[in-house]
Image (tube, rainbow, N blue to C red):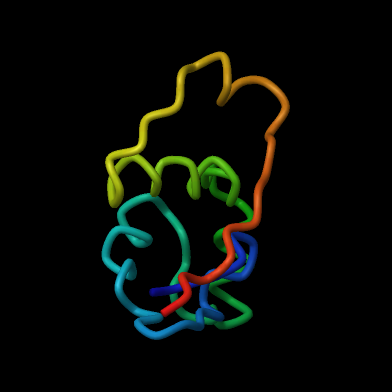
Amino acid sequence: MTAFDPVHPASRHGQDPDRLVEAMRQVGLRVTVPSEEEAEAERDQDAPTPELAALELLTRALGIQLPAAVVEGPLLTVRVPPAQG
């Protein structure tokens, strides 16, 4: 479907790299490469961290809700291999 690094969400890949673009925008992930002026302005704003935005994306786009204790604790990660077939 799609894969991206939350720190660099404008660089997406996969069979359908733009599938989650609207949901990504809604949670505050930048889906285009910002100009220098835009990047500077964003540094001055209280934007969500990429990791928190990615967790919010799980909820909005996929309906996955993590308990508060999980979100507020150490962030565990897992790599999901592509489906075979």
